[in-house]
Image 1: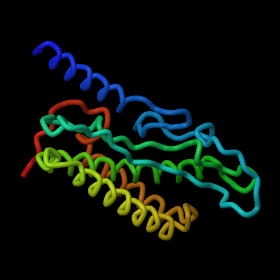
Image 2: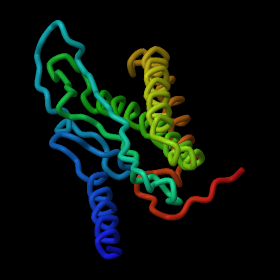
Image 3: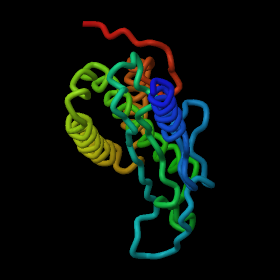
Length: 195
């Protein structure tokens, strides 16, 4: 009986580990070394009624019942670019490189939010044992905050056209990414939260 129980637990853990790692077609996980390219935008359009550029991001989680015992939940929360829901109309964009760079800034903003989500979940991990409502609540708050920050970026930079503001935002984004560095997806080491 103990062997059966142990086998079930090991199967669940292995399944849970593999679930968090798989990317679907068109998805790209945020990485400091692999930036967005024109080929990541899968929808091809040339329609006067659409914006010239649109990027879709997703901050998701695969937190399970025993995760509250872990000392690092970074791999349980993903920040993905959804290429199958994103486009660049190359007939409308003057500088494709600048526009892709601006979309990368938005992806970086989503990464900041994902890192904040990872930090907050780790801090509140004992609450997970009481139910997953707390995880969904934090996820919803994270996504809502991302939408507000993304809109602010768009307004302040005039959708990437105000180069001075773009430079200011890049500096701010880089600083926040460094500040939350231990909460990047790739970090599997134990994280000790400072009080």
